[in-house]
Image (tube, rainbow over all chains, first blue to last red; front, side):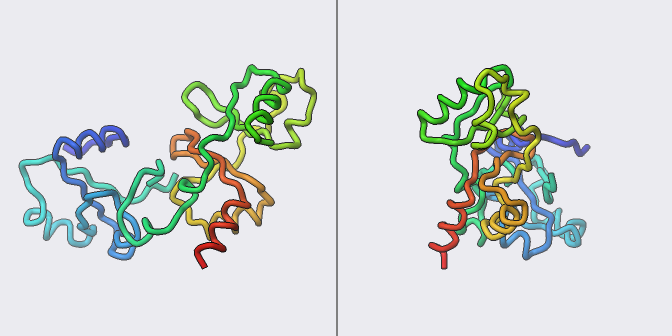
Amino acid sequence: MPKEIRREEVRAMVAAGAQLVEVLPSPEYEEDHLPGAVHLPLRRLDSEARTVLDPDRPVIVYCWDTT
Amino acid sequence: MAAGLPTEGTNAEHPRAGDLARKDVPTCGLTEKLGDVKARAQAQGWDAAVVVNEERVVFGLLRSKELDGDPQQPIDKAMRPGPSTFRPYVSLHDMLHAMADHKLVNAPITTSDGRLVGLLLQQDVAAAMEKEK
């Protein structure tokens, strides 16, 4: 089940092998993304998630922080 | 990104607000006296200080005008409360416009949860943009 996590937990999980996924469109990803993030835009998420992501490792999905 | 941590991508090659923000800006707590804070700031070559709590969450700002107030005044009465803050990922171009529009000579840069990253000076933004040309 999805759950919301904070910055420090993201860093810890990525260090432990979690997959980081940015779901924004290409221009945003190309401009800026978190180190090591895989690009999987929302429109391709359903069709490509199974081939791009490893089902045995946690997946952290993020978009944009507007705060 | 909102925390000013490293990123990858084309924008990562250009300095942003968090990169230029001066991390050595003096800070103080709400219960200190204005005169003490002014003396400390001046000793470090500053005419500004940021008011924070123990977790470095920004509560207010003391620019030169506020620092020139009654030295016995407590900081919570002397400070400019709730100053406009900006996130570390904001481009220098956007910062320069925002600071000019709002007549800000400096602005606190904070994480999305309000923690101080540093104080950005308009003169530093202008100089960096001139250098990038």
